[in-house]
Length: 100
Image: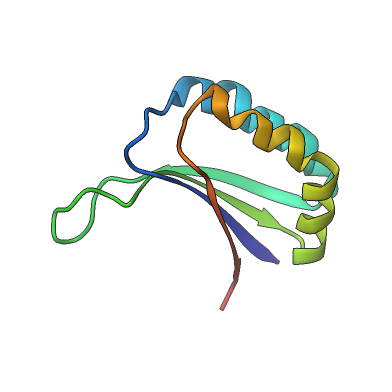
């Protein structure tokens, strides 16, 4: 099992309604049959010292494996990433994580 973090930096405008009601259902629809087990959205609230959060929104996607994510991204990544300009101008950063 791996965790894919899709992180949107703080700053650019972000349409949370579109993201939650259109984009994330698209992600779940396309990738649920391809190894996606869970998709959680979190919003940044700040840092321990009171500074702004470096990321305003993060999608945490639990996948069966890195290989499953690679196949899902190859199959539908272009469509999913092409939807990003519909809710933000932020450049998404993607990170693969192992569970310790």
